Length: 369
Image (cartoon, rainbow, N blue to C red):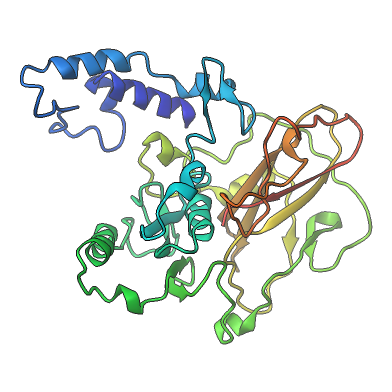
């Protein structure tokens, strides 16, 4: 998706409409490109801006210059990932500024985390949190049990209600609602809470425990009790992927109506561990955390962990995922400007450690909510 995003940004920067046409949202013949401001009566300012944007950075080039969280780009010491984050400026925001953090469960590779940590980091602000069954931009309802492909939620009306309440003083009833709302996929219902993570409701899904540990055991089993020690071997195959209809495609402005349609078939590509059928319905809300011990023949590795729902007919549905590069396995971040209810890896240069081939190492990382 980064290549497609790069192509999209270049086409937007240079007002290359033929190059934009294949991307979702930009193929409309009425799309007229960037428009001049009021003072630009002859279009010279617009032409100048387009020329300047030809020098914009390219994402694929930029990310290679920043392998660590707190590094800066070589040509500008002030330009870092930190400087691009709202967390960098969190303490400068006056406490009377209301904040509505909105995201979807499959909103790219971490926008849901960003929405949640905004909510947790600024508890003294008038703030709300909304997490829906959406992809990036809330274009698609990602639930396989949906009634329609669209978002099925008046999101812009909700945003206007928020502005009416806080900017115009209109009684919208917002003050009588709980601050956290989230959608439970497969259960297909909205839920409300006073905090994040939400407290388990006494009557919900037979009062399932707040958290449960699962252990990978022999013969691909997943059990609530640890089994005998052992190991599974996996030969890396770089042709293996999650497909081209994943949560990432929308980041590159690719229109996706159905996500992970072939997830059942893809299970055979990975090491997978399956629990016994659940005795009762279980709701998974929040962040699962993976602790993975590996021994590698190489000095680095990227470890992906997926959660899959196996239905009674044996078909599989993608739920969520997490990933960690082994280089960044050391150290967890604790910052008052990024408060999280899940383990956050530091990704910084000081804690980076390559693997020693043949020696075991533990990777701890959170999956997306």
